[in-house]
Image 1 (tube, rainbow, N blue to C red):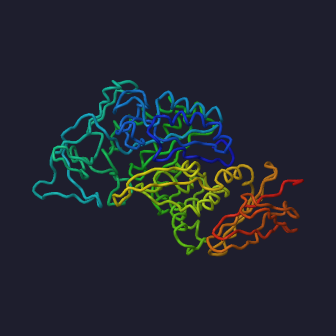
Image 2: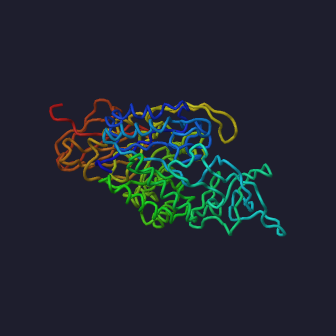
Image 3: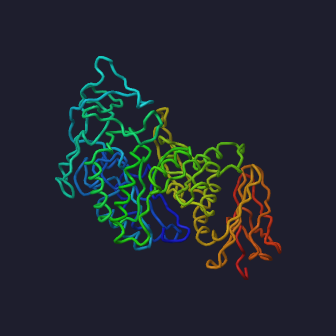
Length: 507
C-alpha cells in the first residue's frame, strides 16, 4: 500500500448490467473514489468468458482477450472493450489510486473443440472416490478441452490448450452426461497440494487446469508478464486458490514481482480467495506459499454473518478469536460481504443490514488488516435471480448507513495507539489515541448487539480535559467530557454502533 490506512474497494458486484458500460463508469468515478478515501480499486475479471457479454468473468475463456476480438458472440466483454478497460485503469492511476486485477487460473470454459481422452468418474462429494467398474476402471470421453482461439489468430500468444493442460472436466459429450471426470491418460491425477475438502478439492468447475504441467506454468508466466505490462496494474486478487496447486504461486508471484519492479516503488500486492472459515487452513496455505500473498479473512466474515443472525446471542468478546486479522494482521484482508457472499450466490452468507455498520466500523477503524469494502454495500444493488431451491427472488440491497463516513474517519481519525475493551458479551469498544502527524485524530468506538449502554474507555492523556462528539449522528448532539486521566464514558444505542471523535477547537 502506498498510503497510511489504505482501503480497497471491490468495485463491482455479481449482478452489474450486461450493457458494456462499466469500464466507462469506472473511468468517470475515479475522482469520486479518491475523494471518498478509497486508496485501491479491485476490478472484476477483464477477459473474455465462455458466456460472452453475460459472463461475470469467472468462466474464463481467453485471458488475452480484454474485449478486443470477436469471440463468444461479441468483441466487448460484459464490462466493455479493451481500450475502455485500459482507459479506466489510467484514470484511476491519474488519481493516485492503486488498481488490482482479478485473476482466474483454476479453470477454463467454452472450448473450441472436443478431444477424446480417457477418464474415470468420481463422486461430487468425494473427488478421491472413483466410480468405476472393476473390469473397466476408465473409459473414453469426448471432452471440451481444445482451446485454439481462432478469432485471435495467435496475437499476443500462439499457445493453444488441449487435454494435456487439464486434469478433469464436467461434461462427457459422447454420453451427453454431466459429472466430474478425472482424466487418466498419460498417468494424470488431481493435483495433490490443494484443499483436502471433498477428499481432494482440485476440481471446481469447467475444465480444471493441470498446474503440474510445465507448458501451463510457462504459459501463465508468459501471460502474467504480458498482462502486467499491458495494463500497469499494481496488484491482483487471485480466485479460488484453495483449488490450485499451492506451490504454483510461490514461483509465479516471484516472477510477477520481478516484472513489476521496473515500475512499482510500493511492490506488487496479491490477495488470494481461500474460502474457508477454518483459520488453520489459512495459516497452512500461507505457510505453503511462503507468505507470498495476503488472504481474505473469511473466518471474520463468517463471524459477522453469524452475529447478525444470532438475535443478540453471541459473545462479542470472541469476535477476533480464530481469525486471520488477529493472528496474521499483516496478511489479512478483512471484509464484510463480497460478490460470492451476497444473496443467491453459491457461497451465500450475507451480513444482515442492521449489523453491517458495526461490522464495517470494526474493519475500518482498527489497526489490523487491509480492509476491503463492497461496492453493493456502498451504492446498493437490485436484482432478480434463482435461489438454491430453484425459485426466483427479488433482492434489494440498500447502501449501508454511515459507510462513506466510516471510510472518511479511517483516513482522518483512526490513527495511533489502539486500546481494546472486550469485557462484556454484548458490548465491546476500542479507542485510537491519535497521532500528532494527523491533527485532531483519535476516536472511541462502541458496538452493542443488545440493549444500549455505555463503556468507560481510555482515549489517552493527550485528550485529557477535552470533549468528544458523536461522529455518526446516532447519539444526536451529545458530547463526552474526557477526565484528567484520559478516560470517558461513551454511550451507544441498542443494537448499534457509536463512534466518538475529538471536538474541533472552537466548535
